[in-house]
Length: 351
Image (cartoon, rainbow, N blue to C red):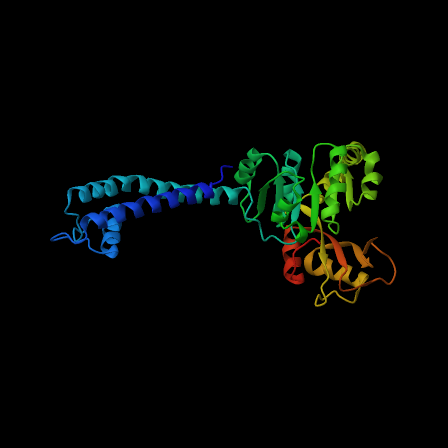
């Protein structure tokens, strides 16, 4: 990106001030005190300079000497260059502001959003599901061409784009990364992802990180490196493929559940936080199960409890389990059920 050279602009302005100031001194020396002269004071000379440079030409202040008029010609002809300089600088400034906004250098106020490091077709698929679920996303890329592609698909209030070197962690602050709910490291290969996770955690230690792995055997290595969630692409694909072979309907339903439901007849699996004012707070799990099915056509399938910062997933728990404020409810629902539930819980889905 071409940035304006402010030092050069200031030097140019200083030279112009000195040049016109010198001409004004000479003009006053030539005109002041002459019979019928209208340029007798510094104020008169400044007024003549301004109305000449702006091409207003009221005619109330005119030089009467030969050399005074020559200086007037200089003022008049140079006004074209001054206008061109000013208009050029304004255009350059506006272009810089637009470029900085497009490249994300002005920053974003997104909060509880998803930060994605790296852009490719897989990342685009992930973003489409996140945006469809109403989540805001900040994408950091080091390829300028990716910015234009992202802008074609998503609006700025949905997806914030940042053009930067991934290792420039100061610039990553522009993505408001410290306020992100999770950071998805979407680089090219597992080795590059591992090195990057180690480096970025030195700067943003308390964030949640997720990666997708080509080699599922590295999952434990990434977990020890501080990754919150690591997902093997091949492992998920192989499970779905095997399921399609011997349980095709289960596989089809499973694939639908892990994606965002676009149509009313499509199902999705979501999790909602139980706030203190939630009507299911301090309610037995079994009762919540039947009430949700009856009132919202939603199937409660699990519960997440957080103790000392650790998340414990209870899958369709048995016994006297009570839902408490701060828990998460895992539910299966269609689009209509999701809308009913959002009104009931007064909160958006997700963590």
